[in-house]
Length: 129
Image (cartoon, rainbow, N blue to C red; front, side):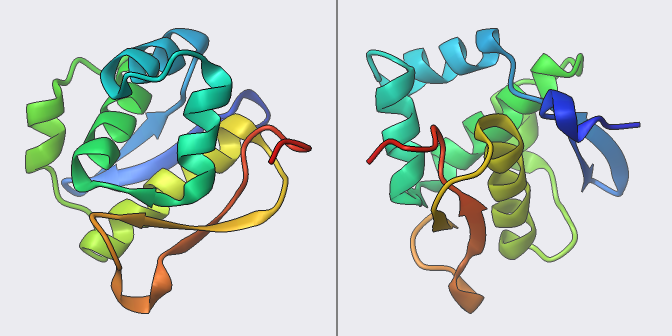
């Protein structure tokens, strides 16, 4: 069972429910993967709301690994979810919202413009611009 107060979400991948969470170690992994120098730069990347498909794979992969799953980013790239691309956008948006909390609404689009306009996520680090 997930605990939203600890930043956890649940997502169905390949028809199986999984818990995802981004710990401090997961955020460090993403900083390194994206070449961001600190959490503020990482948060600014997420606030822009435009993420590539590769970035979405890395975010979901980090979320799964931080929750104890033994998966690689290549494993994640082959996974499927309900709703196709929109389903992955929803997972990323919910995970980032659970991790960083409230703030201004933003659109999250994985891999460019999504059909339906993307999922709405709350911006990371409330009070930052």
